[in-house]
Length: 277
Length: 326
Image 1 (cartoon, rainbow over the protein chains, first blue to last red):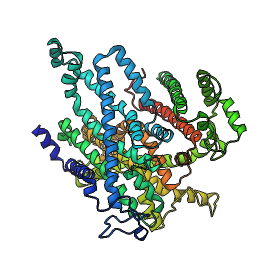
Image 2 (tube, one colour):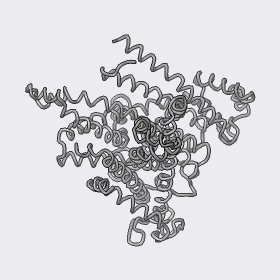
Image 3 (cartoon, rainbow over the protein chains, first blue to last red):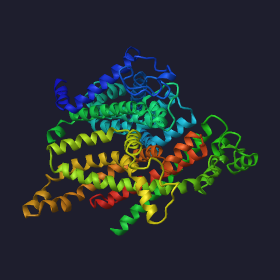
Image 4 (cartoon, helix red, strand yellow):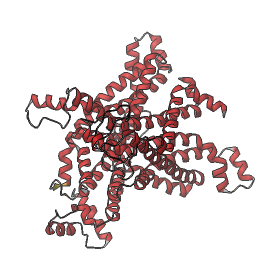
């Protein structure tokens, strides 16, 4: 384990990714403590103030403090990214492990279903789903999760196919372990490496998808995410550019951190690639 | 080999048929499972539709008959390219989509050419100079480009180069107030094209750069490169004649895999710059809750993705003679 961490910390970019993510998570957890103002309070005399000492990210076109809004926005964006990625990872592992472990007819049927889900362009189906079934955080998470599990399922299946004929699996089976024990206790822990890398990258993609949906006007209006902030401040960009700049910058940092962490974890799993670099 | 290739291509293209059928089925299910009367998803909500039009569409799509009959008539309509009627534009959905297609293709095509050339050249440069400062900087820039939300980059471009500096127009494809013809029109469109293309190329460029760089590093250590070098072939020739062709395959693969994200990127770019293509049309459809148009766009884009993915597969095999046509 320490060897793994040593490999991870050898690359300063991966460390940077981790630092950014930890800060963002802290900010979103501490939320109300960090935010200096009520994010929803408007004020005619404080409209579109440039960043300064009191409002250090400025105020938007309605006089709301951009920083305070962003603190809560980070929370919603991270929540959508993490929950959607976890849900689709869970679904993907379930389908992929059964498919790879049992093989035969089960594998065939599950893989056809997976392919069906892969045929349809995810982002556009998400747009249609959210537009048809109303834009709420739950609907957005469900739409993203339902559409992004196939990649994890295929990956899990491939890992299971290569692991299931190893000796330790035979040994477990011979000692009388049930199928579910072999799948979840024996094979899955050994397959987790690549799965964790993919689902880390999924967090970033999910946040990008949510922000993209919001930018098209399909964000949850009652739970303001960074994407919704960007969408709302866009018409006023000419005289209050800061109200768009900071939320955008935060989305960028959040996605960047998951990409950097994903790359770093990948180096830990495939150390020989690092040596080649 | 010619015959095998043709047989293979036909076989692959035939596979698109059931896939497009699946998309039509999904579309049908969505229209019928969404809350509200499905008629509104075909001609839009509100009091805009005349009773006549409602009755006509209802009959056309057989909404008064059992579900399986409805499904068959839906398939029939879609196959005849009848995707419904957009009330916002008061126009047939399919005609509307076709009229916006050229603008999207112009943007995507230009961006594709620009990012491919720049990405490959940068990849070659960095890939043959492993671990130099230039290589490191290029890698960091590509990670940044890869993580940048395209609409955010677009807004930055818009604020800086259009609103603040006034170098480029902010909106649309040509100047409506001062219409041009001939050469003038070409120059006008090119001028409008600059910012959207830069915005839309960033992600693609980062992607192509990453792949080219890694592949170049691998290729440069292979035996045939060492042989070419030993024969006394010049460095430039080694790179362009021997190494570059080997990087094309992974580029085709990676673009095929990311096609969907490239299309999503074009929708968001068009939205930022009010580029009159399919993406902007989709944004308008979402804003106006113009469901017939939205569903029609979804149908067309999904079919496009399916066909391009199959073509990528074919191209992949055409580029690499080692891949068999089985």
